[in-house]
Length: 536
Image (cartoon, rainbow, N blue to C red; front, side):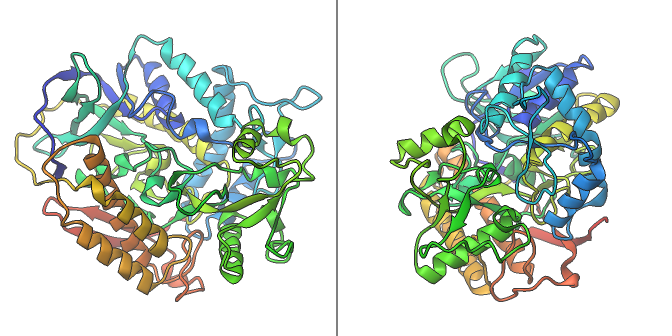
């Protein structure tokens, strides 16, 4: 199965292709260069426009006095609601501190305390102060800056910007041998071409644009997961979509990327209140306003439903030095007519992070030889049913390092792309808003068999709206369709409430569902699914 596209008009080669320029992709590329492998770094927009730079939260690592990887592991397992892969969590928390130190050695500058030590703060679900921040609420931007500076200084990394990866190239035996790309812009590599390599790493970030409101940038259309799916790779845990509980509400009619209000603001003393001014999280969880994100998001959803209001309120008026501590958030609020030092901020949940993705092992290997996945595109199992705050940037650092080591040790010779014909499809870009609304209404914060059934019916109807005109918008909406179908199917199959998956018709967790739902898509367009045991 592949997307309808024109014939490649140019060819480029490298040892390894890395698709994506966030923390996962950049870390992988830099570590591959340590082994003297040539890297082609492909990015959909400009090299600094991915999700990493938008991360207001920080990086979680056991670096503080008295903190240990084991304590970090316990917090991660609790947030993951029984579905974390124990070995993956061990890797994350034990290799995390060194990965952060290496990032600092590469030039990343984190906020310091009055004593000159790195300032460690707390976020939802953490029982210790272990979050590193940069520029208050601009951690992602600083991480991106430091990694990009290193990439730009390396002549062994060729960067192709404004390029959408369309499909994986595979040999007759099924091994990966490159990708087809579409480059936007004039020049020798304008239009569709092919990039050949001995290994491919997908690090394309999130899929937030599958919903009507999201914290993700417009480029986050889940291209990497869809790319892997069409090649026959397995995906897992895609029903676990984390909705960030505190996103600045502006108007229900506004779609796309919305301003995020980091939970670090609650870590500094902000509290959630309903229309009656009641602090509703106070008695809902031992950690109150700093409960894990899924708990906070669902309580906000319930408060909104009870009051028939499109949002609740975040009272930030007692946060000390708000403008200095959270300059990015402050500017966003002011831009939207709110002074958080004097006024409460209207907030509501929006899609934020996918705990699932392309199923990988501890070396980042997918079920297809030569194909790797890293960061939010991947499902390592470390997040389980709900990602612990600030573990995402850490995952990109840790597993990007592991992937580069595995490629260095096991990289195959260049294989020849197959000439076999494959089924092609392409959907009409006009279906995008209908798809996003169907997902938000039926497969959002709260789900049921009825809502998911209605969503799947809508998606099936949308699948008939085909197009014969290849373009970026058509490729993106075709990717969104595959992801929406996978999410809704898995959410319907999982008849329980767990982590960031909430079913109104199955409100309790069940021991029968301590399993991972794994899906794949065969060459005939048939969806396959199975249940995998969770490794404790």
